[in-house]
Length: 195
Image (cartoon, rainbow, N blue to C red):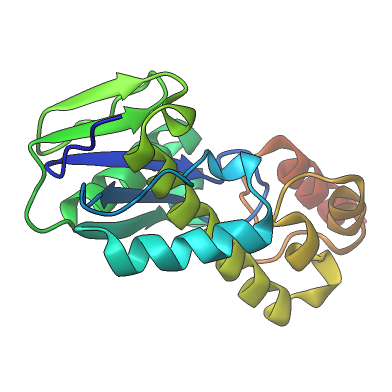
């Protein structure tokens, strides 16, 4: 596939977790580099994602990360917060790309022309690269969050609603990084208030 250095791939990770930010990345790839190893981040092992993350950061023309915090997710809702994270990721690219290729079917308002691509993280190398950068970055954030709140096991589930995470949430109540607008967190808060 031909790679357009003036088109940015944009993708996000972290819509479903109960805690932590939603993270988006925007990447413009150098067509002179071999990007044939890129895949959707969900189809790669953690080790391979880390290797490709380093390669992307070293050889991409431009890349940037944008986030929306748990409190912004609560204030805006997850859909709008995801769009905000994408806007922030794209706004940090220099020069601004001529086109943004956004994974999915829900386009944020961006400061350049954009096209939504359903399944783009498996089809377009620049979107795959954005998927990898965002996933590795968010995983690192949740590992750091685990250092602050080890009892929740963020280093294992990355904030997703596993059985263990939900058990700890019910037992301990939420920490400051939990998304209070998400039903399991609201329920845990109500349970703590009733005790």
